[in-house]
Length: 286
Image (cartoon, rainbow, N blue to C red; front, top):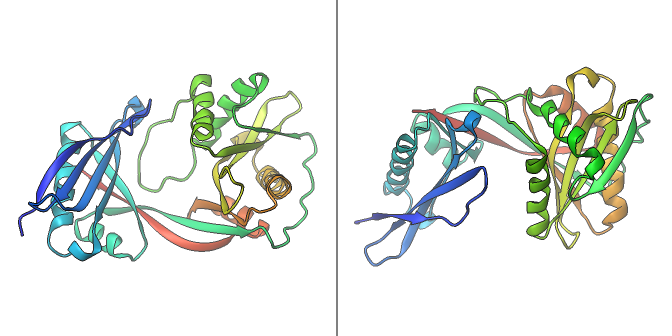
């Protein structure tokens, strides 16, 4: 069967990245698969690119996936990318496909869920700190310290995938929240301040506009000098209380954690998060 690849112009353009794409189609134009390569414009991350590859189940085992993967690799080379990465459910057909094509295991993500109908433990506050919270864009009086606190995620476990420091400024901090609002979702942040009013840590959750289904945890971080005191547990417990109060129809909360991040996994386990699936983030060095 003759399959042709059609390069596409992808409208999904973002300030810090853009995508190039390919459509695999039969001679009559019937789509049978697609691939997307996201190029990162950040100087510290330009060597990395994420990709997605999909082949219709009825069209598999005919070399279409391999054809699309070759296009992805060629596109990565053309844009001076040195490593391409993608996620696949551990042990799935996609995971085996990547392993066959010599993709190494970069890290394993544990996906866990908290059932909001179940009781969670009471967590006491931590002396010397206070909690603050907001919805959407961070208040002006906290925007700089919140931006600075994002450095607390710089040393998060990343397996064998090497990336530079992710630099944030206040404009990017505001923009990230605005994007969530523009798509109709709601962002809530719980943070902890020290005695001097500086942010020691934060945790974010995004809930769909209708307040139903499962909320998705985004970033959680505690700055190194404030670790070991239970701040993450305190913030996340407050986060759970907040979403329960604001969204009585919300069913649960979802989170993902690198399997080697033992401290965060212990925190999630204590709060009642239960593992649901494992995902392999695989990489190919070009």
